[in-house]
Image 1 (cartoon, rainbow, N blue to C red):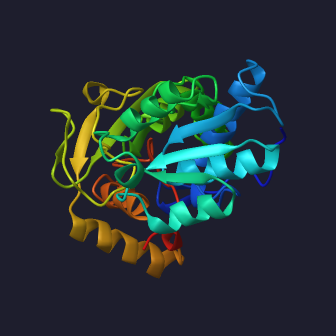
Image 2: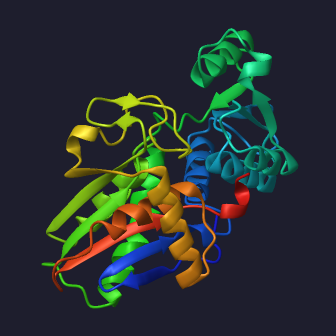
Length: 294
């Protein structure tokens, strides 16, 4: 399938400090790239066919759910999303309006401990009915960010004149870790030094793989990031709820950008990690739109 309205802008918000504006992607977030890649991979490997009887299933109610709903509707695939009350009601409503069947695990499968358990129960009870896209275990996920998001950022930085000796620091939250893995891999094709800083939500300890309850949907989701173990991070920077709110206010006042909480958390860490010289570049992401949250 051909891409449309790409690449997304790389905005310089401070000297040598850039935010990749993924909330302007036609699929509404960075996860739209993953949605396309996961379905492309399934089609190319003969796991599903357009107009066929095999439906798609994934555990998500957030940005990936919307991206998958867009791709599934455009290609004529049936899609089931397994989610829970912790996800944005607005995002779940958007996915449903786009044709996805959204299942609330807590209502439909109260005996399942988590969304993965619910997906496995569905797969066992209806053998052959679904193809599980499995964002947490599918290598097409980080590949989408290496070949898409990361390749775009690399081209944009080279186009601005940054040479191979530029020291690049990437600020990213970790859910699956696919964004951090894919983008950092792409940047290392050119830049000799690339560091990755992890954003640590309130009440979490990424080094200890402790994921507490917090409001940053998609970060520290209750399990270690499979594609980017926390031990590989060069640094971990915690954020508070107050810092996230202040960063969101600054983004809106200075750039008229209304983005989601995880984007604000990234920017909060960026503000703590200003480049120290002209040879240092800092990159982070504005993932999604503020209006997609309650």
